[in-house]
Amino acid sequence: MALSGVEIFKHLPKTNCKKCGHPTCLAFAMKLAAKQASLDACPDASDDAKKILGESAAPPIRDITLGTGDKAVKVGGEICMFRHEKKFFNPNVFAVAIKASEAGDVAAKKIEAVKTSEIDRVGQKLRVDAIAVTDEGGDAAKFAAVVKQVVDGVPGVPLILVSKNPATIEAGIALCADKKPLIYAATAENAEAMAKIAKEKKASLAVFADGLDALTALSEKVKALGVEDLVLDSGARKAKDMIEHFTIMRRAAIKKNFKPLGYPIITFATRDDSVSEAVTAAIGTMKYASIIVLSSVEKWKMLALLSLRQNIYTDPQVPMQVAQNVYKVGDAKDNSPLLITTNFSLSYFIVRGEVENSKVPSWLAVMDNEGLSVLTAWAAGKFTASKIAQFITESGAEKNVSHKELIIPGYVAVLSGALEEKLPGWKITVGPREANQLPTFLKARA
Ligand code: SF4
Picture 1 (spheres, rainbow, N blue to C red):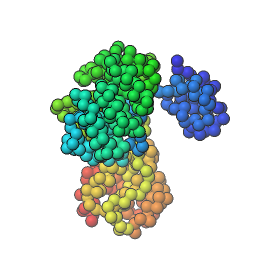
Picture 2 (picture 1 turned 180 degrees about the horizontal axis):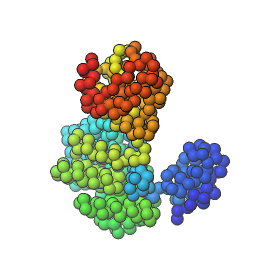
Picture 3 (picture 1 turned 90 degrees about the vertical axis):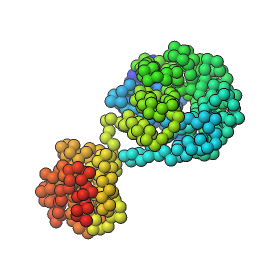
Picture 4 (picture 1 turned 120 degrees about the horizontal axis):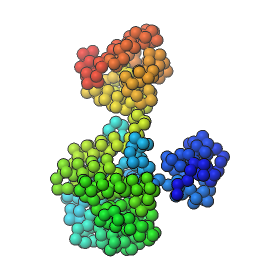
């Protein structure tokens, strides 16, 4: 039963020490009640409080961590149905499947693809997160050989061990027990044996059953066997079934606090046709799958999927921002052009990319406008002549250049006169409206 903010408050230390990042214990209690904070943030919460509040403060979908160290990934922990209600917290994991029969060259190619999968998109590093070693035919030795190849080839990558055979899982987990792998899967036939392994090795455990009723019953059974960190697979593989099952599961967990379905979802998007696979994985990304297993991770596919994931999992209420600074683009010298833009990530990366394309080394002054784009910031009074002048003076931008010329975005040409008044001695040049015109503009001046 969910507790109200006031009821939660009664169990907090009431010292208002602010260590949790909130001004008062009551404010923190309200956040806990809204599932927008974790009790872990209060270092002084008593054991009694943790016991009483644990259930109430826990997110309706349990969060699970796969792997250890800097490559570990957290999934689940979600609190809403739609991202505009709050935001989605833990991006889904993309894992590539390596079959036991692919030991050797094929596995090596997939391992290399994972190692080189990282892309940098609007300042974030995105990559294939995990590898799923999949059993075929119950050959435990072959399975273990691939697990070893992965552990040696990509140290630290989170692992999913896929076999319905407990003996095969035992053989694989012996090589990676310290890496907190996910075991896939407990079924009606093997639940006791799989739960025993998961408990002994402190691994998380996927539960597979065909359909939501069977999954609910099996999830309750495995939890009763003492495994807390569960991941669920309802067997849905067709797009229609995935959307239906995953939406019901999410709704049951979030709206009804229905614990047997309050765990992250795993699905296998593996298809013979790569385009179908990409589409299926995209559906899983948009509709609540936390772990999506793919058969291959070609660059084109991952660029699309990782970009989609990034968009789904950014906070819709907080624009993506870069730090205010004067950035050097190329080998800029003191006579290089000085341009200014706002700190909305997309503005920055697009402008920077076009300045790089021009091959004209430049200085790019990026002003903090709370992540608003140029026109929005201007309309909101955050990119005015006074504020730009103050930024240019206080940021030390003028120390980087021996000239006094500032290139402003064409969309705010209206600011040029006022800026020349606010920055005496400076020449204000109006640049192009669109960033893609910057290469021509800069080259013409060089
Ligand atoms: Fe209160 Fe704990 Fe937050 Fe301190 S850290 S203000 S005691 S809730």
